[in-house]
Image (cartoon, rainbow, N blue to C red; front, side, top):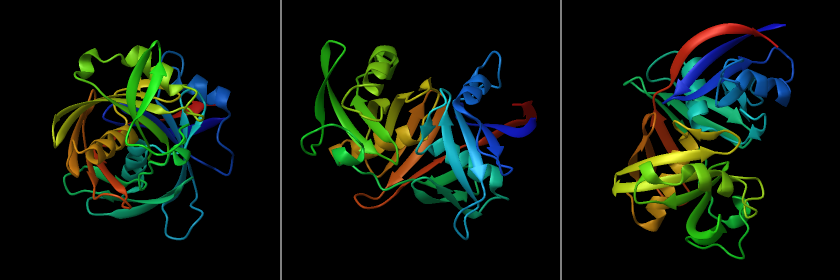
Length: 272
């Protein structure tokens, strides 16, 4: 069966988007095959669009990592969906997902903004194993102890502050922390370098994918944990390997807004 798809990316964080025709999404083994960058299409995440379950929403979306596992949220993916379904600058949309619904907006400068979840820091909401909530946690991993800040943006994140992201041990600590026993559902792990209160550099080892060129919810996690620690302001420019995102957060009890580019690369069909 030949199925149409759209290839998109947000700062190099790339996606294949498919629209449901009444069928269920492909099984995990098919998603893994499609994700292969040599023998498939290649992507970080697979985005499956269904008819919205609530009035007024443009679509209901599901997110699958390149290893076939399903994720709860994806900031860059949500922005790409808004770009695909939107009609032009100034348009506002509502997108439905597993965690509820989010507002999105096509900006007049051709960027796309999406409203993500209200950050949750309680360990049981991340989830993260700890006796009580704390600003940061000491975690033993790979023969060393690191200071980790945790947050849920609809999906779980751990954030480490480092002196220089270029030399940060992303390849070793990233996978070790992603699957650490204190993260029951695994986690996205961010390595953040603070340049000044409005600018950070970031690398993210994504759950079920590995290091990506950009991670939208990872950028939000770094910005809100940094603001909570007193390092950052409420509007932060996040420089990732693939480009820059802007994160805005007005503080406790409010949702995070993420802004950046969302690009259609090409359209095609694939036999699955």
